[in-house]
Image (cartoon, rainbow, N blue to C red; front, side, top):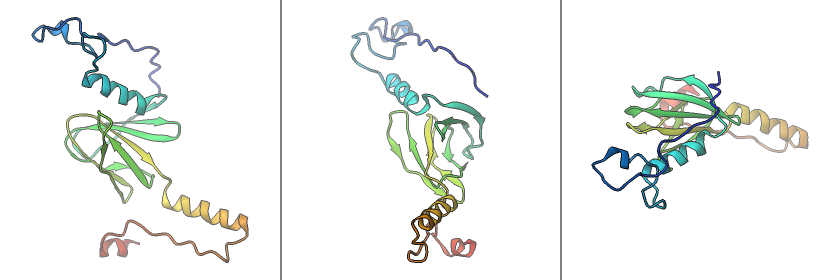
Length: 170
């Protein structure tokens, strides 16, 4: 379900003045000197990095009491989330990366088909990366078979075991 957005116009690219008490002087992405970027410029820059060419897929439940929108960009799922707390975003990917509005990397945990990131009021970009474990095993097994070494090489898969309960689930 694309939104078919053709153009985005940003008002105002640069601050119109230098008076901090005049709102019209402070709407810009960069300062009045035309060279100093504001944080809004950096945030806009990182938004375009993560969402350029992406198609909206709709809202998802973040599990953190906030908002979460899902996008697809060249086969990669990208979630934009904000709210407060720890996310529980559904995923089929084995890994994820999270970035704040300034491009900083945030700690991420992926377990039991969920992505966990602690978020606040500012949007966070979460990219689902890596292929699911079972898909990776299937691909590795097929590659070994094509090379004719499936009986000579042992394929060992592990990960995600943090406690006795995880062992029991496996």
